[in-house]
Length: 249
Ligand code: PGA
Image (cartoon, rainbow, N blue to C red; front, side):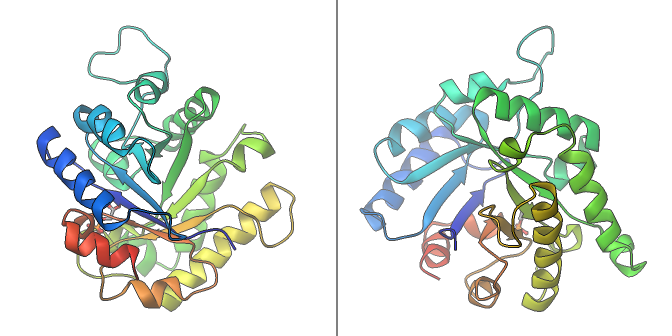
């Protein structure tokens, strides 16, 4: 079993000063490795400060997005190499807010995954169906399509570097999380599809995270499922006390 990964996606929250304060607090509360992988994804402007503060600890820093080109006339965009130099080892790719608000499609997400891997960043690849798709009974087809299109042209070794985050859109920021059984059903489906892609046994070392209204109150039930290897948390990761509770689930 892989180590559990507790990841905080801060979205457009926290200034540099607030980020530093949070990481200092986290270091005080988790001075040593206690078997949990901790990750935070601050805003681009806070990445360097976060990485500097987290250096030498077991706190990992992720970017929330990258652009897939290496450089060029792409106003407002940030490359994989830029976030690596800022101190990141991970990048969230294809978050549903990127897909929905910023119109990112599966092909662009696939190019971003390729760019991240080529540069040496470990991607956290987000997939998830929306409420209409779930109610129409096509959630599994949607997830399979996102997986196939997102991971196309990636080598088996590259797929092995990916962490998948299953985040049903209807559960993000709504306070309505998937039940542990609903999440497990989808996670085991995803694991089987990934295992077929990487031609490994049923149990791959790939981590599959659940995201969508995860809180200290529901994390235990989710993490007790065999195919849930960690969580990607938005709202409940912003407060040091609740993030601490999540890590100690
Ligand atoms: P939430 O966000 O925990 O606030 O629902 C999760 C996410 O968007 O990654």
